[in-house]
Length: 292
DNA sequence: CAAGTGCCTTTATC
DNA sequence: AGATAAAGGCACT
Image 1 (cartoon, rainbow, N blue to C red):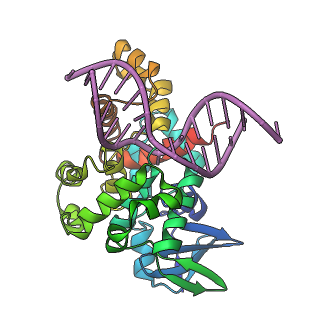
Image 2 (cartoon, rainbow, N blue to C red):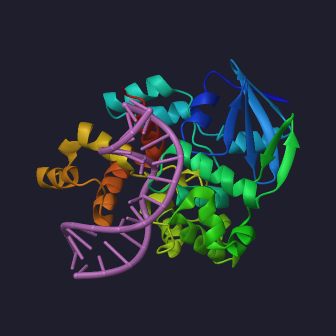
């Protein structure tokens, strides 16, 4: 199956799948192989054509956010030369619409880890607690369900390389398994309301940054503006003039952000870049990460 | 190559 | 409220 992409709706598969927003993708030759829920499929891009197997076009359109009007988004977030440069370099990078549960558990694992390590943790979890499927001569493992992880012991979870995150994965899985968070309802409410709802998981490995990542990468709240170390660096480098110098001095001196400081940077991002701040975030993040 | 630093942070404690 | 420390262990330099 294939989808013809229009010149006005660019997509770059390598940027989109390689940027570290989703952790269950691997490229073998020209093809990207992915696992989403129980589905295993492959996809490749040949110029303006997307070719894929074992999955239908509607799913692809939704998952890759092909309905996002990128030119419109670019015109709205290009507030300065920094975003402009990032867009020029990574044009076609799209925000995915991941499965919310998989996204949540990924970012609970992701705290204070680097991208290769996050992928490894998720693979370990999937191998140990997920379902095994053969496809195209490779074996793939689904992300374990909330039930599976809720029933796993923290010891078993820790053995997947989670370290102290094992407890948080266990607790978060339990709360989701018990049905205390309705992901679908999050789509219908505002960013603020949805964020508040997700933060009922606070104290169990879900803080402001994780909540914002879930809202952006799986719920489609494109105004979400996750602030991680890289975005903090971008702000210090290029946007410090938007804050009082005492504040800049304070956050420069420390490596991690207090909640109030996070909220201040987050609010700046949303106000400055507008309703598609999440896109600005992802382009700036990627640009900063690939400097040097 | 070894050892040090850093990681898409959160939580606990003072 | 706000500051500080601790937390696996892997990956990169």
